[in-house]
Image (cartoon, rainbow over all chains, first blue to last red; front, side, top):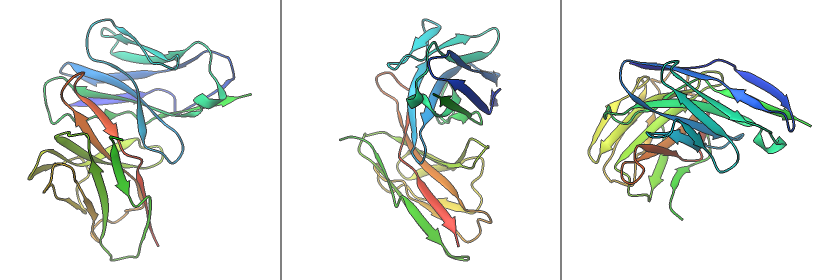
Amino acid sequence: AQSVTQLDSQVPVFEEAPVELRCNYSSSVSVYLFWYVQYPNQGLQLLLKYLSGSTLVESINGFEAEFNKSQTSFHLRKPSVHISDTAEYFCAVTPIYNQGGKLIFGQGTELSVKP
Amino acid sequence: DGGITQSPKYLFRKEGQNVTLSCEQNLNHDAMYWYRQDPGQGLRLIYYSQIVNDFQKGDIAEGYSVSREKKESFPLTVTSAQKNPTAFYLCASRETQGSGNTIYFGEGSWLTVV
């Protein structure tokens, strides 16, 4: 079985400050890793994913995440946040070898960017 | 535009009623999913379907039912047996070709029991 732990339920930061949203996972099998973002009253949008290859993955809006297999982590970072980054962020994993393709989610981190 | 359409966006249910949430996708994805979202609990899997005419229970299937008669459609019925149905419901489908194994979500439906 897999589980995902997002270590911070809320992260308040000031605009233009750096931010890190932490994600750890537990799994007995190899997994793919994802970060999704959810704006109020909307569905989830894929932010970035790690499937294989380089352990550092980037999104088009400046976020990046690094897969660390030894620490079973997939922390999300951004060097300078904007007000528009205020949202809830979910880390998720799915087993590489098909178990229905189910995503297992963390409980979410609410990022609040203040001016 | 390709995507996942959920309807209605907002739905009110009286005690003892069954209600059905619609989910349609035109992405040609084989697999579809229903998740429930409650504040502070992340997303929990209700049902999923990997192919037409087949579906499996997720972690919290009690009080829910689904059907998968067409590839494009995966409706969720919230029955009167579901004791606490007020929540945000998200439908999703999975891409298995190309970059592979990525799940995409609809815009969600709010269900409130009155």
